[in-house]
Image 1 (cartoon, rainbow, N blue to C red):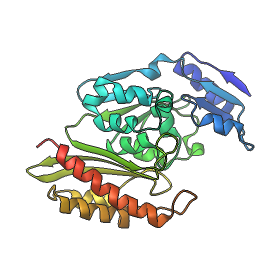
Image 2: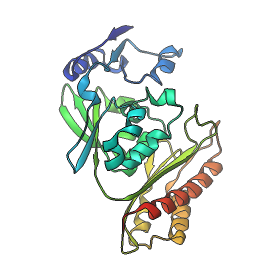
Image 3: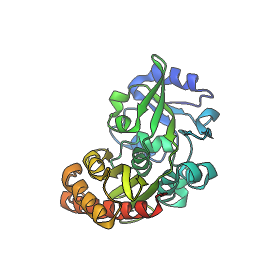
Image 4: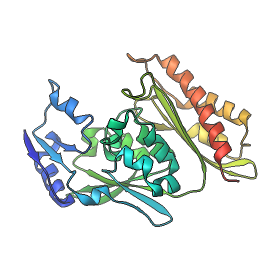
Length: 282
């Protein structure tokens, strides 16, 4: 196994192209270590991108917040610009595991993990974020987070995730989840909500759910039903029922049954919407 520490994005892209699907990017390393030590690991090169300063930048122009892929959960939870312009991301980052994990886990690694309940992936879905990617063959590319999380590793090819862009909106938001051991495990189910309220009615809603399908998902049917509905407790209850019945598609696994996950989707969606309605600017 070869190990590299490129100093520039282009250098990292050359290495990813050279080693192809047997190359792995090292960012936070919270999941890569387990993969590298597994019996079936087929890895010939580790490309450590931590020395590339461009991947750590956080910038806001008042319309769009851009977060480099190497920003850690600890930085996301504490950064003043993110708390001001994308509080949903800050809240999700602050809920991620123990402090030791938050200091190394990165937003890019969370997105690339492919885990169906990855905290930051779910929050980014509700924030309507866009992935900024780079490939040595095709150059820069933009892709919605919704599209990116549904790609498996082979479909992503040798693209390098360099940053995410989040549109800055005045909205009510909430991030809630259910897990058994906060410091060590990902959520069984998590829900991120962002709502625009005008005149007491929902103008636009974005509802994202993790742990309810094979990948994080946008609850599109629930979002459509929320549009123009009154921002009330009854609306939140109905939306929770719809999300569980029409949007969620959980499976049984060693952690929880599909029925239990579906029930969590209903309860947590209701809870998140109530909190978002309360915090929404009027």
